[in-house]
Length: 94
Image (cartoon, rainbow, N blue to C red; front, side):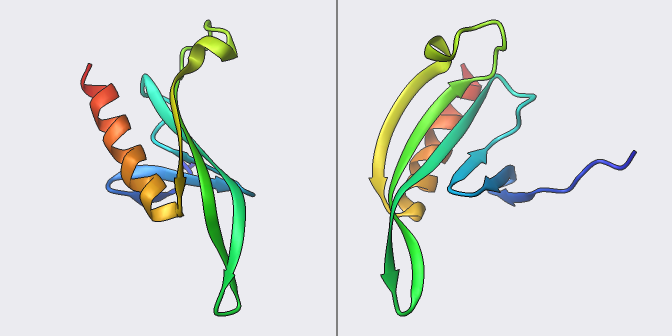
């Protein structure tokens, strides 16, 4: 069976499902989950306004509460992706 191709951001998978985005590989020790909390209209397009960011440990043996390593909220998807990339880069170097 062929492996599914995902969109990438800075060389890492970026997968969207509704208002949730996952950044990073589930095969790595950490992954980022971003949730679009609010949207606003700009020039007739709906864009992400407030985005919650979570750095999660992918260890399936941990409870969901213990999987959460770090969390924040940013205004706009670009700022959220920017901080997500920094968090993930640092976490994967540990």
